[in-house]
Length: 307
Ligand code: 0GY
Image (cartoon, rainbow, N blue to C red):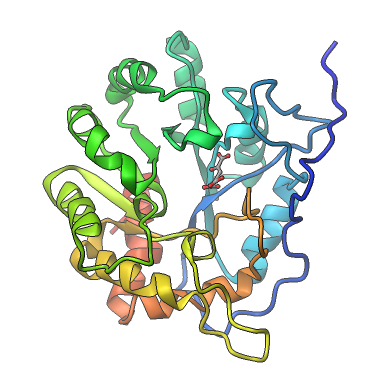
């Protein structure tokens, strides 16, 4: 029998309850293109191979946040704590009634019937993480096999890696037969210059390949941190030049997501209302915001609704 009782990882920060009202009004049809559901563990047990046990964050909590912030739709991304059991994800997609699409995790031996079933409920991509603290080994072989399997479905691969690892991975990534979506701008070191060689390499990789970029997770990438909570709503300023550069250079290939419920944050948990107020600093014109928040995610996840 599966054990459905879980002890949350010591020091784990709960997600922010009662987020503030954003000052920035999202455009109609905005998509939160990177968020997760965690369990609840009693219903959807966490994977035995997980590297952390989170605080439960249910589909109901996620949809309440969507409505509070003013998003219209979600892209729910399978988190490593659920391994390749997509049960919680599929359940959330079914509940969302067309207002959510998903990115799953599958193993190389996944059946064609299972891939078709995932497609029917709204999955449009498969995620692979190369972030060492989240996986036992780089999933290179599995990625190669699965990318070939999902190509006929029109799916893409979501990649999560750290900037320092891109040089060793980019040739392999470029050889994959599907579009690539990069989480959190490839995790740049924001103490370096956005005009420096490391980020320039990332931008060249994006330029040269069929790559989309999530300009997400300022709260994870920041070194300067959020502002003191004294009414200042322009947070995570050290991340802005990186995200702005991506949005300006690749306006039609940038995506944005909350990353709610923000796994593995050690120092602070962001107020998701404040995160939304980060967006106009990154996408500085109405046209860029329309592309980032509406047109781009629709082209990738709801092409039938895209302009
Ligand atoms: C994120 C970032 C993290 C975790 C995961 O699947 C995951 O466990 O994505 C992280 O720890 O940096 O995108 O949620």
